[in-house]
Amino acid sequence: MPLFQRLRGLTMLGVLPLLAGCNAVLLSPSGDIALQQRNLIIISTGLMLLIIVPVIALTLLFAWRYRAGNTEARYEPDWNHSTVLELLIWSAPLLIIIALGALTWVSTHQLDPYRPLARIADGRDVPPGTKPLVVQVAALDWKWLFVYPEQDIATVNEMAAPVDRPIQFQITSSSVMNSFFVPALAGQIYAMPGMQTTLHAVINHPGEYEGLSANYSGGGFSGMRFRFHGLDQAGFDQWIARVRQAGGALDASAYQALAQPSEREPVRHYASVAPDLFQRIVGRCVEPGRACMDHGKPSPAKALATQLAGQICRGEQDLVL
Image (cartoon, rainbow, N blue to C red; front, side, top):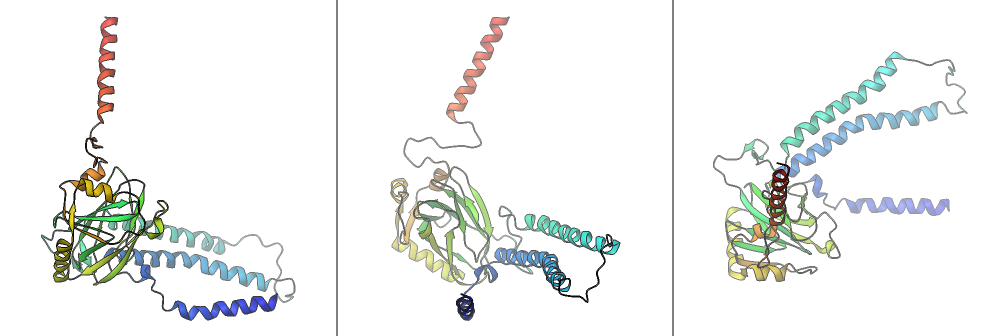
């Protein structure tokens, strides 16, 4: 058995060089938001290692130095206090916690997904008057629908954006809670039915990147992936033109057919989109004759119940008088 364990360990070591070819996308992002999040992970991990590494090292050192067989180690059974040691034990973790707390507070506000971008890269502010590219994202079973309201197009399982232009993602879901995630671009954000979440991001390097669902949503979850293309402005314009040439129309009936559960859906293009389709997806009222949900106003049933309750209360007051 010991020989087998040694051989297994040597085999695992032989696999390590192969891992050098893997691309750890979280540690090599292509968008400024993802880059700031990468730096936050590294700094936070480094601060925590300032405590973890010395503790582990000292634990191993003490176990070796004061082992039963070491007769040269000094034995002090009556020792019980050291002011210097107490200060070190308590002050070092406290300082680390304060630093992590300050870092968390600042980064939580700077990297708020609902906050419009103030910069497109380190040392490069967003040019005045720059309008973000609006992309409306709907998580379907089990595919991604992307609507470009300004360009009046839509795609399935494929999207593109110009380099160095802010992007505003408006995100929802058609059925169950999901999670929109492009690791090279920014952190994941939930897609929930009946409401809209927002993500601001920017892609800084041209390329093709993978997007996925980061939240289990049923049988086709594992194939719920899409391609994200970072293009220069000319390439983005050409991509828009190709979508318009190859696509059909995405109206309410086409959407209802698309929203039916399906797995590993191929890329689709739509040259036009029905007005307010995304808002109707959020309101869960794409079907004809169905009332839209409006979180800012009471539902018809709730409004009727409130009205009846008011009439009953007024009637009781009249009886008392």
